[in-house]
View 1 (cartoon, rainbow, N blue to C red):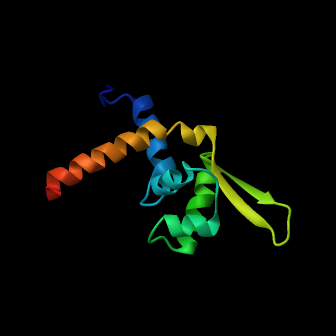
View 2: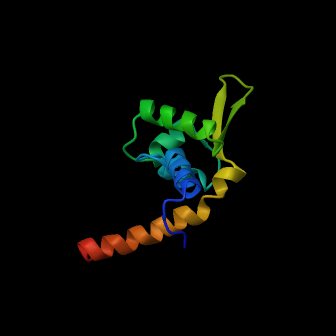
Amino acid sequence: MLRGEGCPKNVLAIKDALEAVEGRWKLLILFALSNGPRRFKQLAREVNGITDKTLSKELKNLVDNKLISRTVHDEFPPTVEYAITTHGESLDRVIEELHQWGVSHRNEVIGK
């Protein structure tokens, strides 16, 4: 395990990682996309509680960070589909570990 002994490169790497997935929604969006490509409204339904405005902003940020792709299908009406990229899939272990920790934490705090 890395120890935060003031190494600027380690701190910068962690800062970059946190900025890429920061916030309440990004990891939940990635989790939803781990089951396959989704359209905007599908994501809005699966990521319970997110507003369309926030979902749009978070999707743009995830695309900018190359964690997901955005594909516009040439049909009428045009449809847009989002999918996790190979780079985004590299977070699978992190998301799974966070899920397991969340279950354990919930049991510790709530006792269920």
